[in-house]
View (cartoon, rainbow, N blue to C red):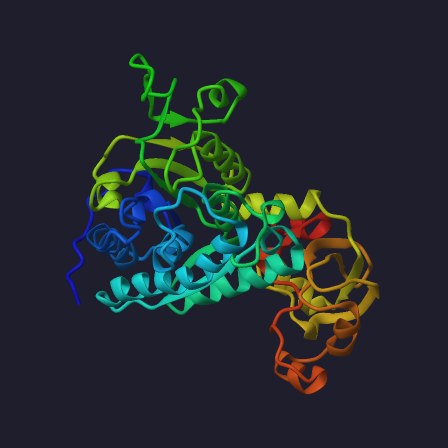
Length: 388
């Protein structure tokens, strides 16, 4: 196992706890050959392993599957390909891409897990919760998820279109506090520095305003599908999720080390934390589909910051499915909280009042221990007042 050198604390990345790193094809794949830039990948993984050794959880959003698959099938020299050819290239390229990450992380004894996502996986609530649960479990087990768009089945109408926005959606889903976009440019400028010699670098953006958006240039060339326009779109998604974002130059070896050593970049701020932003979304953006009534013991547990377990539920009302919003009430029927329920109304009725260890016996499958997890719950009314 290679040694992992500690970083010097100098940037906002130092207090990050959960970090998403987005890597574009232009950085990972040599355009002239269509092969992985192994020295670059190994240097990047050395940086990521060092972050992990510092106690940070790491998720990677990586392009490159189509580019690698096109090389494998002898399509690398062609500037364009049919949709079905790119999908076929992605199918084999995803294996090659995952293998490259697996080999590189194995040098540090780190397990890699591959996840393929479509827009519906991040936007439809039930699939969102499933993917979120998988990601958080992988992180808890010490793995590094390597995430890509599911290009083997996606069409132009159902694609993210670029991995900048995919990175922001993953950060939102995983409640990451930091998103790093490694690019071929070291941040945002007042104009396109490739054509405007007077363009000035902007080190910090507190809010993506129309004036900031007007500074964006056109998308890049070659294998890259994203430009500054998509990065600013990602910054807006990230900010709404409570995730700060940074655009940094990734072309040189050890780009994360350069970032932590104070290299030039652009940081995008956010007014909230990931947990605060998620709970604000739960509280104000969804309509309740049903309700749960609790006993006094469950009310006390919620007041102490605990999740809601089936044992504390005395009544289930309404017709709801897994991941729907429900209101949570005390014995006197006053509203105490709102949250995303883990079970459908039918299953919730069956396990209400039961111990978590009895769930499998009652339902015939091993579900979650919680009826509503504390991270998917926002306190309201008397319960919130009781905590103040």
